[in-house]
Image 1 (tube, helix red, strand yellow):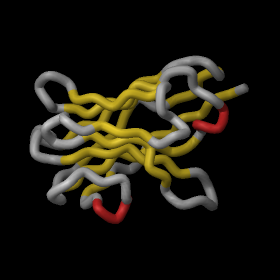
Image 2: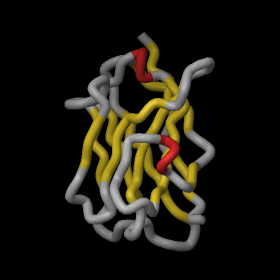
Image 3: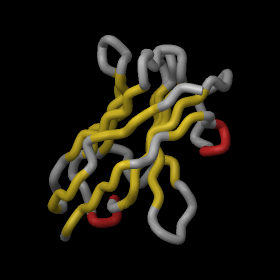
Image 4: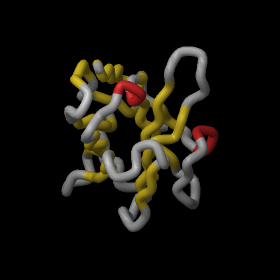
Amino acid sequence: QVQVVESGGGLVQAGGSLRLSCAASGRTLTNYHMGWFRQTPGKEREFVARISRNVAITSYSDSVKGRFVIFRDNAKTTVNLQMNNLKPEDTAVYFCAASLKPTVSSRPSDYDSWGQGTQVTVSS
């Protein structure tokens, strides 16, 4: 399994922006479908965004659509989540996940490898 690591979390005021990045140890993420999920205490992990291995498919949860963008860098060494117009309800631990399943999914159970998460806190 590939090991993925998230970075870029932090504290930001409402309306601000953050970019999260997900990288793999010692390899590219070219062959993996990738997803971003988030979780708050006492709640289940929630789908945020996904991107297929060939970049043809991207999709978002309704709560972030129009504000967040998922994309791969040109060398496909990282998968990034650009988060704009952040709201206090976006506060969560954000996780990057990789999947070798045939199709890209929004279900956490379809992802094989997970990072440790990065905290995003949006103040009002």
